[in-house]
Image (cartoon, rainbow, N blue to C red; front, side):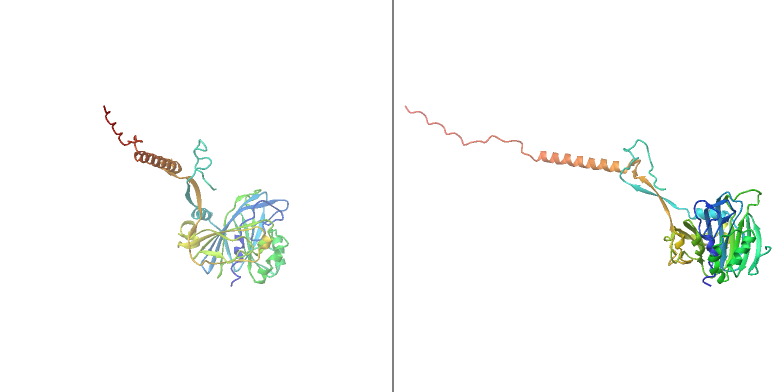
Length: 374
């Protein structure tokens, strides 16, 4: 079952930055390809994973720009999946829960912008069901969810899969068949999504409705294989809701994964559909892939050695003040006063212990002259 869980999490790869011109790759889940002569860029992809050891829930949301009226992408899933619209409030609440802690960090000596180096005050803040198809492709279901045309498929031939997608309005790159073959060999299924705004003439722009995908799983694997097709650096951003703090087993060709938040959170409000209202452990992970071609395999997420909590801190540097006055000024004044007082005492003691002045030396008495004789 090790390889069965992950492919859906493929979508959890965060997005390439910047615009992508057709044909182009826009997300780690594989390919997001717009219509001919149009472009689409994914400026941000935010994804949430809830895993309880038996089932996996994925909620993802794209923020896109460009002038494409339609675009499509596909991701493998290890088992039969259900797809529905997600709750956009989930992302707002998670952003609030994982916000950095603001702390003050004091410094003693004045810096440029502090008195007496400027006349202005400064805080010194630092921081900053489709027709047609091949016999080797099966259609499990097809639904319209918001701006998404979603097809759930099975396939025993990667080329047949690509041909079915092309003939049913899901534009895909030719190279996708090669990259998808390992998943076909493992008998995974697929979720194909065509983004098509319901309003006639609209283009894909801004924050799209979130999608929630649910499937059975026994291991938490984050597939990265299709991300090797990306032409621009990849950024992985992932919220993981599980019983323990989670971590990738290895960097798989990217920079070292960074935990930006770890801690227990209440499973209420927008988290309740994923957590059942129970307290859960939330781990937020970021990772960069400057050279996607170096991605060596899939992420395997495992429980960390301990559930150590962590929260980022944003420091604001502030001049140390005491009683409304700069501490360095008070310390300097105290030092000068101490030196002045010590000098005064030393001079006073020195003056009191000195002799009054040289006294005239008294010589022996001069003997009286004898009386004159007659």
